[in-house]
Length: 162
View 1: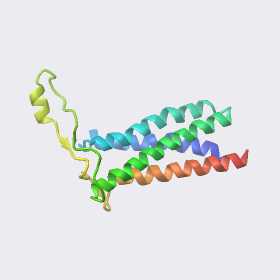
View 2: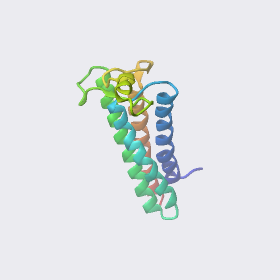
View 3: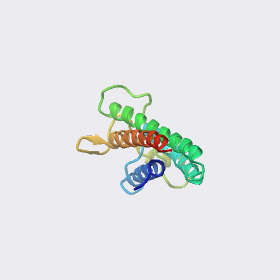
View 4: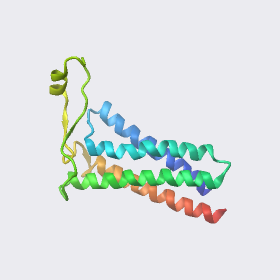
């Protein structure tokens, strides 16, 4: 049976890797360009990965490992909160903080006008894809929020096991 701290560490590393992998796959393979708020959701996951890796590096020191696992879990939770806020903007429940953003087009950097004209505009208030009525931002909010809570619960449980 896996103890709580190793499981929390695993979640703290696997969740951001998988969610960022899915985000980049949807962008580069699925053509779903991220808006500004989509990028905001990625940054905490990008921070969680090295924090979780430090937690793995400190496996021999449970207090340090738990601290960095908790920080990674906090970053995952922040991404989830941003995702839920973004989903609310997409569903029209409230207004977003930004306008539209653009994804950089590839091509000759010397031809800036053509590059700008070829760049897709990605709106923060329109969900480009949904499954069962839930957008990618909504899925990130749900999965990241649940994972952050699970990591917190496992860390509390690990403290009682020590």
